[in-house]
Length: 94
Image (cartoon, rainbow, N blue to C red):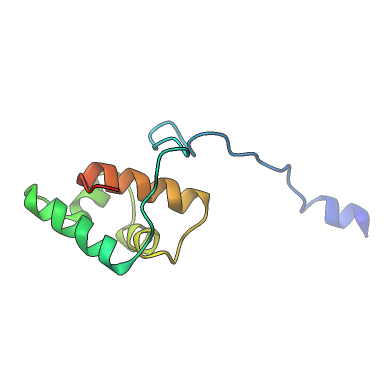
């Protein structure tokens, strides 16, 4: 039985700093997720002459995932790093 389980156990991963090099370091303040934050980010992109959906497409992201990280449905380390990245790109104050 242990041999079967050992095939499914992976090596633990420790996150230090950002999830990837494009993201904001984890020690920067990340705004709290909310529907209001989602609306602010969308509005900020519109004032720049683009949209959140277009930004997602240009950055290889799925817009439902970005929405989930902004409203708090996806709030783990990767979601927080993505939220910081989107907020920074939109120019919304934390």
